[in-house]
Length: 75
Image 1 (cartoon, rainbow, N blue to C red):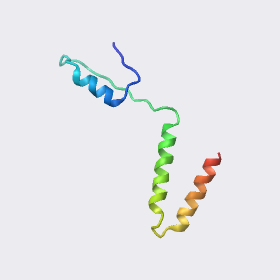
Image 2: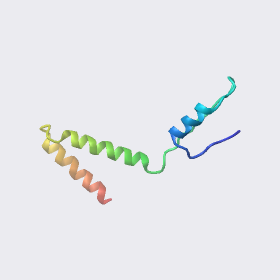
Image 3: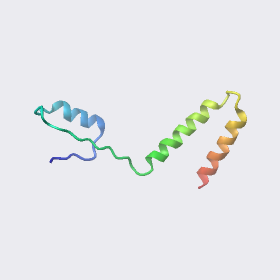
């Protein structure tokens, strides 16, 4: 079985568009996350949520979330 590793989705799309494959061809795509990428994604989403809360009248909640975020940065 032929494999291609470490290409971007756009590169993969270009390759698929240029291929003429028989109708019975099966393609399996495995997407693996880099270590820590899930944690970075979660952290980014949390920061975005905090930004949305700013100015919404939830000042104490925002302050508490920011304090927790600062504690996480120290770890």
